[in-house]
Length: 111
Length: 114
Image (tube, rainbow over all chains, first blue to last red; front, side, top):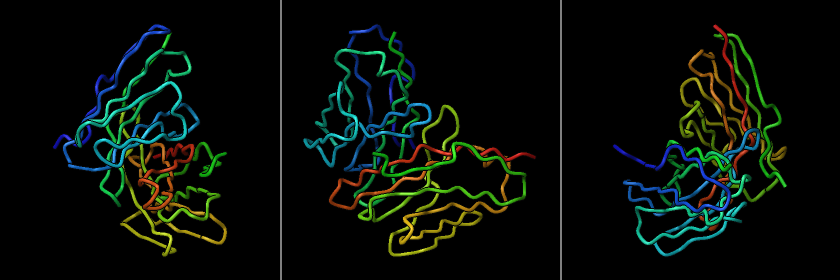
């Protein structure tokens, strides 16, 4: 019963480095999302996807890119890491009308 | 522009008493509201939801109330238990044609004292 799996759980980056946060789900959900959580700010939507090959921007997309080549996977790419991207990142998935199921989170620090 | 607001960052209640967590929203197009619970170092987990066509939904100790005219919803936990101590997020959905994405409030940290 894996649900939504995110890797890595922790990562430290230097300014200007690139990395990809991986997310995979085994519930055959069409909808997938990336959120970031900053202290006192709740969860902000970065990007989302309504199905393979379709992605769209959320509230805070700048500095990030996504792709959705399969139903299961929704990686989030940071091209040039900046200190403002220090956050906890959550991937989530849902069926078309159901509630979101979240992964355990990936804590990213940019120094 | 914060479309979903939780104005109380924290709440402390005694075990056995009622916990009331509040949430306000600004967008009248939201059609579905949810509450999520989050423990440290874990992802949020779904707790309870309510459709915009209803004004109340109950699930065991948890009840959500929706007041559409006031654009306000609240989560009642009765009786509160120490295991309920967590951060609670309210969330609103912008409609089926919005990709099912949720807009979250800032969260309220509930502490239930034994």
